[in-house]
Length: 189
Image 1: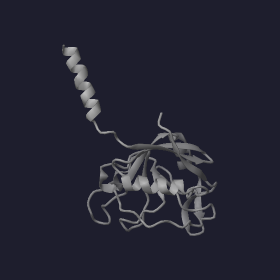
Image 2: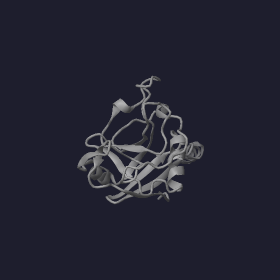
Image 3: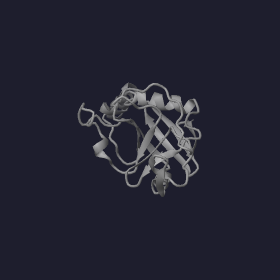
Image 4: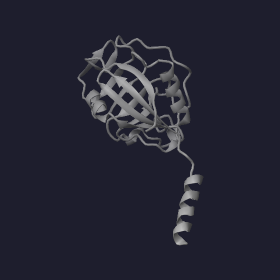
């Protein structure tokens, strides 16, 4: 009797627990693949934005144009010649979603304007709490995390160790281009 009640309780719990919407994507680079789990439940705008750019082929041929050792790697909009691609309108910053800028998380890059993120993103090489939402000021609003590296962190670290230089007016550009060959959705295992 107790076993039956326990089994029924577990089944009810499983059937009534909301399913967390997650999407798997692979960023294919000339340094290897990076697999991400995107958190649609906590960052729906950022995930939809990233996927729209991915599905449109926007990321193909762009580079990780800003690499700062022990901080982050940033990409998503520039060619190897540092020519920007056209982007869609900026999205609302979702940094208030409770996700933190921890090692291996992916977040939307932006300018000094809170709601200015378009196609650029970055992957944290270490915990970067100073990038988390602290308040609603321009300085404290933070950067919206929308996913986590689930495979290929060794590739992220390899990119993060790239030798960099100043190219044209841009600092922290890898000497050897780190090219994004594509971003594709993966089937869940």
